[in-house]
Length: 527
Image 1 (cartoon, one colour):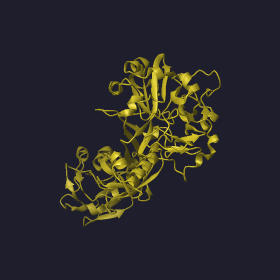
Image 2 (cartoon, helix red, strand yellow; image 1 turned 45 degrees about the vertical axis):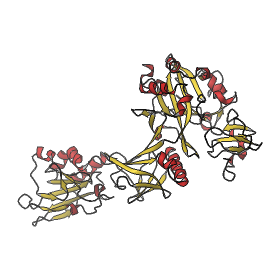
Image 3 (cartoon, helix red, strand yellow; image 1 turned 180 degrees about the vertical axis):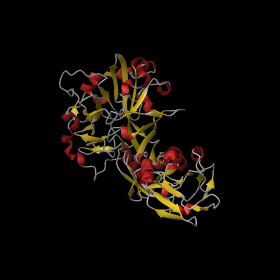
Image 4 (cartoon, helix red, strand yellow; image 1 turned 90 degrees about the vertical axis):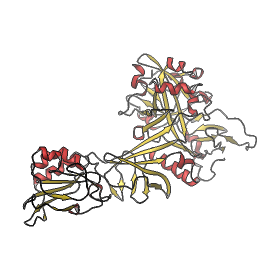
């Protein structure tokens, strides 16, 4: 595959890139033009003309040399020099000038911009030795090419987005599905190998572009079959059918009753918390009984579960409590005349407090709307106060149990076993990764905790994501690590990746995310 001739021309100004990573020249393809270079960073094997980049926008031909366009991202504890944080700088000079002593307690080399060694019979680009708290450590750094990967998206809203298992579309192509709702959140599963490689070429391309954009904290539009149109962005509130969400519900209707029962009982004779999943009725609820509340005689539609808890009071939707209703009285079928009384005070409220209505029963036991008394408004406000802000959480999930392990050790199963024994700390761009139990190395990481622009793509199609393995030097040697390619942190800062033939490597310094533990000292590694 050759580089794209039309749109891939931004490297005509290649000298302005500073000093990009220079990669070892691949074997010569005899059928390739003399002025081109074949890139072997992924299976596409782009043939790149001078001054152009490959199909992934990550590698380029600069004066006959295959170079990595993006700089390696370096995490630094403490202050980051202003110039170094804004611009790419070559490795030979430390960020604070010559002679600055940096160790593994201050600097961490991430996989962002590190390049890959695919196919991974070659050692990883960076195998860095450092000391942390007097302990000899090793961090193996690479960018993994993931075909087996997906995004799990948690959307904090009680709005109904679509039926479970419904297709989720991006630019008209199916890129995922609605999965099981969790407490106060709707969940999507996006991407995955079947969308990347199992459908049409267009489906794979759009799924890859979608995953890259969401992983890089950009906004993406989706349409759910039979459901809502949504805009999602990591760390931001979702937009559902053009409306920006504000609150995540405090709990289901029953939980809301339980939390605020005493405050409700002080100002109302009956409270109904409308919720698509479990609607709560105060006087029937165990909380109301414990408070010795008088039965109101209200008759609520739906399927009664335990006392004061009703299922299926309405269809799902974007109205009250995630239902399709605009009039809360539509779920009230009537009143038991032997228990209800004229003047009974009724509060109907949603699980977020965004919807609330106050009624008083007249002589015919018909609810009459009235203004919310101040004490009742305080209860409604308290419900809203206890709702967390609505947010979209994007988790990257990838299978790292494949060939990239060969970049770490010549006996890959040893790496898998060491990770399961908690001897290895796995990070993605320095962000902590959760390793799923069971076989292989299946990792999951919150993209919001990763550096900006951590994800790339290759047109196979697949996602490119940073990954780092940190462990004690003695453990690395025991699992058959590539000791011959081990470099000290100081040598790495001066020389760059081992396969760069001594050419300087561009880097970018950023301060460590304050919410993340320092990767080399996380967990049991130094225990």
